[in-house]
Length: 381
View 1 (tube, rainbow, N blue to C red):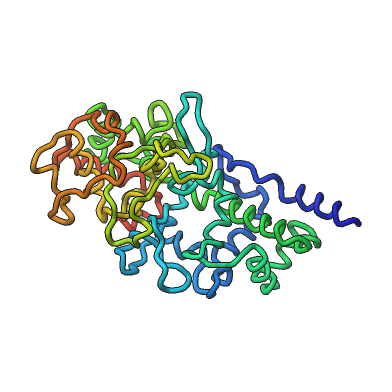
View 2: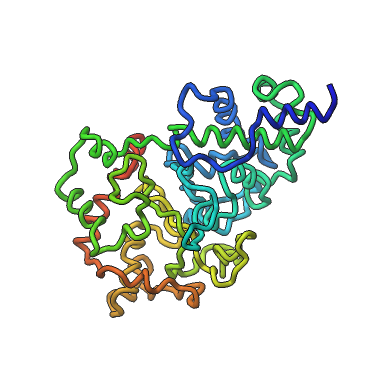
């Protein structure tokens, strides 16, 4: 068999690296061999330079696929495989990442979708390989080094050859593409997107909300808060697969996090995406899902806020400029300045009304209902 034919067959077996489907994640009974391989790779620490961390280190399945490790920066960013490097952004949860559409410009000219805070990976397949090769994360030198680590594990070798054919390792780039495809397949499963929160169960008539949760729900969907302007994809929020994000990019004036390395200061946000490279997009980040938000702090792209209450209260300063709203309750000092004030989305931020403690409590009660059943125990901690 010619080398060209081998590569063609391999490409067909992997499938094109197209966008992750926005519809249902891969269900049991789908490509189970690919899913099982992806699961094994997701937990494999040998895929990092010093064999010290896996994908699960920064996307802990016990913590809604986020990183809560204390590492000298109050868990605002992740510790690298080398034991001292610190990332420049808060690791986003991988839960419900399969709902994020491909990076694109919509009919109105707005950027939407894409993985990472700036959308630089169009889909889960593209995203899966980047942390492995990032020198501040898993630190592997290149695709060839990753494939060599894969081949050290006989179980991996059998799984790759069973799923992709005996010639899978004849081309290192193709083998690395197979690895990315496997990780993405695992990340599209219901294990990452269970849709079994109390809110989902309420939608199905399987649970009741408390009075506070119901009042918080009404408040969330009201014009008083304007939450749904950014944190709603469907028309009512009662769609069964609502991601609680419109997947657009905004600059809400988040201050720099002084605990992070100097490289994190002045983060360009969407303007740093190679497909955008537009200074007018500086400081804009994709609206995150609110699913599991109560258990995946710290908050904002740089983890600058430890508490969800603070993140909600932060918006008050844009609605009413008074002494009470100028102070960050976590520090007792004024809010830091926006990193990119010239691109602040002021019009959107000035919609709604400022929230007092009682209404914030109600919103927090509702947001807690968006926690998947398996993570509800974290609400009590």
